[in-house]
Amino acid sequence: MSLNIAVMISGSGSNLQSIIDAIEKNILKSEIKIVISNMEKAYGLVRAKKHGIDAVYLSKKDYSSLKEYEKELLEVFKNKKIDLIVLAGYLGIVPEEIIKYYKNKIVNIHPSLIPSFCGKGFYGINVHEKVLEYGVKVTGATTHFVDEGVDTGPIIIQEPLKIEEEITAEELQKRVLDIEHKILVETIRLIEDKRLEINGRKVLIRR
Image 1 (cartoon, rainbow, N blue to C red):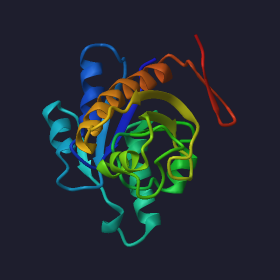
Image 2: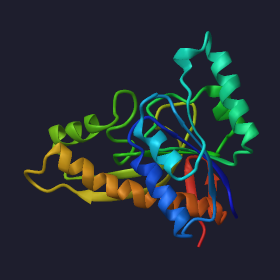
Image 3: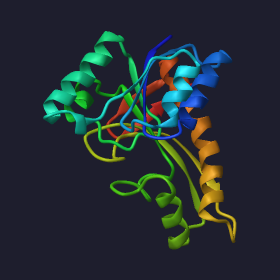
Image 4: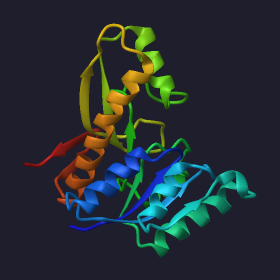
């Protein structure tokens, strides 16, 4: 099943690029209808435009109220007939009304094995620095459905990565990012194929 996708970003957009590449290689059937960034100079907006994808800067700080921002965001999604919203390195909080309207139709990628090293303040290189500080032996990446909390929605895919001694946070970030690209595309493919079933907190993957 082909989906109309909206991708929300805040930075360079490497996860966005992984989705674009998968679509262009026919790994995914869907189409990215719009890319939205809450950072005006995010390079992900440039990536999108290079591939002929509508890309806009939209930040709640430019609106007089959260309600006005919610209204504008929802209008954009409705106009583009969006089926799935993908948070690909998006550092903002999705408004609650959007989450309710698109229940179980918003997915996020996080650079750790949730519920470890997630939630408020855990983003970017911070995650990997905290992972190394704590001394855990395994990290990885997680895709999950988005609910009203921060990184608290039902988990879809997790892939672990063994932590080597003497690795730096920057090196770890690069290795985890490779995993992010892989499992984010796989998550979208499972949704396209209608192979996910949500049962409470559990996401079942049909064979």
